[in-house]
Length: 178
Image 1 (cartoon, rainbow, N blue to C red):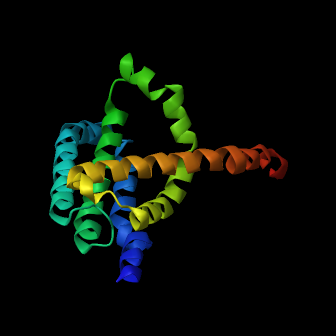
Image 2: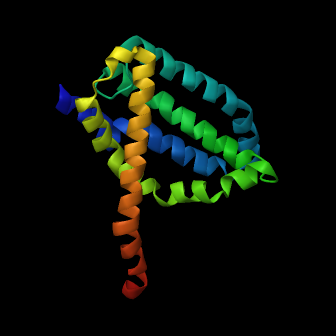
């Protein structure tokens, strides 16, 4: 049921693979030898992860944590995808266009509101799915539209949260230094 899928999605023991992957990448970053090897396999992991997510989405008709396949295989593929992208970013020469891209003010702004996006993405996904009525566009168009709406609403809410809640609180942090 819904409670079990929520527990599978949210509880730390069920997402330990993501925590372990992030921790291993942080440890590997201290070793040039490991990072060279990770750099070699990262593009393969990106492609493999995207393929697994695409197959699951095609098979189920969506990529939501109500299904055991998404939770057990799909979210792990999602973890591998982002670990591989981060590894590629960490091992890429930061001169030129890549450096300018990563330092772009809009991308920096996304970094500022990322915690809000993390906090609000789930309620936005649930509410969007609950009221979603665009299946007459066909599967892929409906999914694309669903994710565009979900991302847009998530980042608008995260931006508002940052502007009116997080940033004012961040300005107060120096007053509480011991």
